[in-house]
Length: 452
Image 1 (cartoon, rainbow, N blue to C red):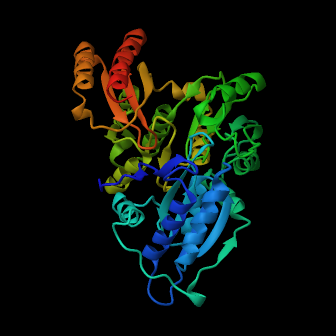
Image 2: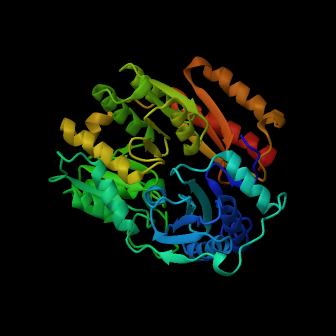
Image 3: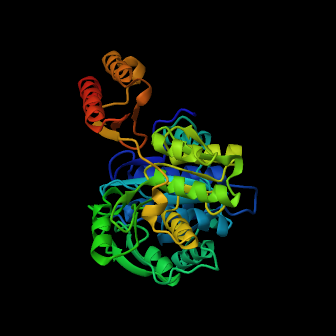
C-alpha cells in the first residue's frame, strides 16, 4: 500500500472545519485533482461533485469546487446523491473524476471526501498518495490557468432521476414488487428521495423512515447503524422486508418479516447461492473481509463455493474482485458489490437484488437467510490517541496470544485500527457468547492501557 497519512481506507475523513476536513484543504485538494487530470491542450477536465445531507456539505462543496475551477476544470454539481449514484454519473457523463462529499455512517459533525476515477472505481492508493504529496507540500503545484482557462460550474438538476432509472433497470423486467410491503430507512441521508421512489415505482408499498434531513440528523438513531427502528416498523406494519441504508447509501442492513436483522454476510450468502444456481458466480468465489463471520464461509462451502478474504475496506474487496474477475463481494457491515451492476457498494441495488431472489423463489427473507448459521461474534470499539503498530504493543500482543490459545481452533481474534476514525476494533469469534465477550473486554482493556 502506498504511504498515506491523510487518506484512509475511504478517502479523507474527519470532523468538519478541523484539519484535515477544512475549506483550505478542500480547496487545495480540488486544485491538485484538477491539475493532475488536466489533459492535452483543448481538453477541458470534467468532474462531477455530489454530497450527502450533512450541514458542512455546503462548506466543503464550495471550497472543493473553487479549487477545481482554479485548475481549469469543468464542474457539474449533483447535489445530494448516494455515493453509488455519483459513481454512476461519473461514467455516464464521461467525466474524468467524480467526487463524493460524505462521511458515510459517521455523525453529522464529521465529513469526508472520496474520489472516483473515470471508470467509476475509487482511486488507487498510489494516486491518493500523489494527491496527498501535493497537499503536504512535498510536490509543487503546477502553474494555474488564467483568463478563459479558468473553469465553470453547472448544477445538474436531474441527477437523482437518472440514477433512479438506472437502479430500476437492474430489477428483472419479468418481476414485480406488487403486493410486497417494504420499510425503507434512508438515515436522513443522501437517498432520502431516490430510494423510496425506486421501490414504489417497481410496485412495492413503501413505508419510509429517515426521510427528513435537517443537516444534523444524518445517521442519528436511524439507518444501517441503528436498524432497530426499521425492524420495529416492519413488525408494526406487517411488512415483508426492511431496508436500512447508511448516510451515503452505499450499504444496507436488512430485516426479515419477523424483524430479525440480516447483515452483509447473510446477504452475500443468499445472493451467492442463487448466483451459483444460475451459473453466474465466476470462480465459484465470493470476496469478503477478515471481519466476515465464519458462518458465511461454511454456507458457501455447502454449495461448492469458497470465500476469499481481504483487508477491511470495500475498496480492497473491489480490487480483489477486479483482479480475479469475481462478480460478488462485500462486507459484514452491508457494503455489497455486484460488479455486473455497480462499481461500488450500493444499498438500493443490494435491496433490489434480495427482493429479486425473494420474488423469484417465492420465499420470505427468513427462509432465505436460514442458509447461513452465524457463529457468535463480538466487536468492541476502543478510542485511541494514535495508531501505534500492534507489533510495538507487547502487553496487547500477550493478551491476544492468551485469548487465541484459549479459543484454539474453535474461534478467531482480529484486532485492527479503523481506517476512518481514531478507533481500535476488537473482534472475537467463538462458540460461547459470554466467553468471547469476556475475551474481547480483556483485549480492549489492554488497548486502553497502551494507546487509549
